[in-house]
Length: 302
Image (cartoon, rainbow, N blue to C red; front, side):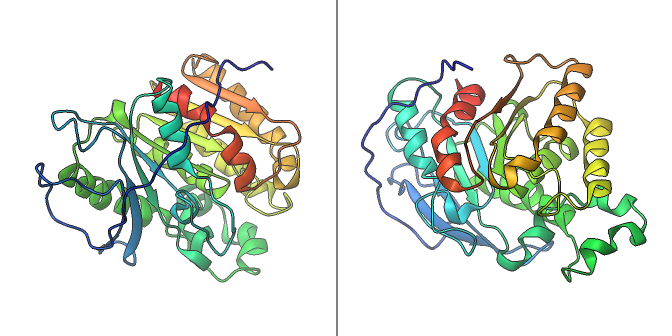
């Protein structure tokens, strides 16, 4: 399909990096564009995250900004994780689009995943808990885990978001608060928007890992996740879904077709408040998510 979304190429210079958080913002002091923090939580283990400020933040002191919370923070701003040596370079894409006047300026929050416990953190908990234990043994026998995504979302909503809204000049209302990720990160972004519709106004779900298992061997769990989405899908949000045709993404289409049918049945209008795109020859990795991230950015933030 032809897309009206174009990604301009603009050189970006990163400014500084800060490792220690502060409790309040001094508006007379310029803040680093990129800073790393750790937040103590009562719900989960201490969580590290990064904050990337938009170009005008230190100059336009009377301006407030929307916020996008991104999963897998380790690979958002030039870093790497145990799962990948590649980066989305989300900050470069955002600044390029801002420079071209294609999107609003936005504060980006990269929330680091839990490493070896990433699956436990991002797996939607309520759908899994609805299934008899005998039906989930196929996964439980392979990975010793206790899914805690509900606790992770409590951290996100009750601890991290208030801390960000206190420290930075945010537009803290639901219409200006977004969440996004890829693979399991896309799945938890969907789950967060369904569970906290009063907090998140839209979700970017790239290569959403609907099958749950790596080779689509647990369709009963995937079906329960899709059913949960259908049962809890809120109105009035913006949704971006996509999938490639290679790697893990080759398993996604049959589930995404069902999701698209649900979207239509619930009154969402394709291209207006919901978008699904199939990217031919795209594989399941950061290289391809980087190549197409400009599309959901413009859909959410134009």
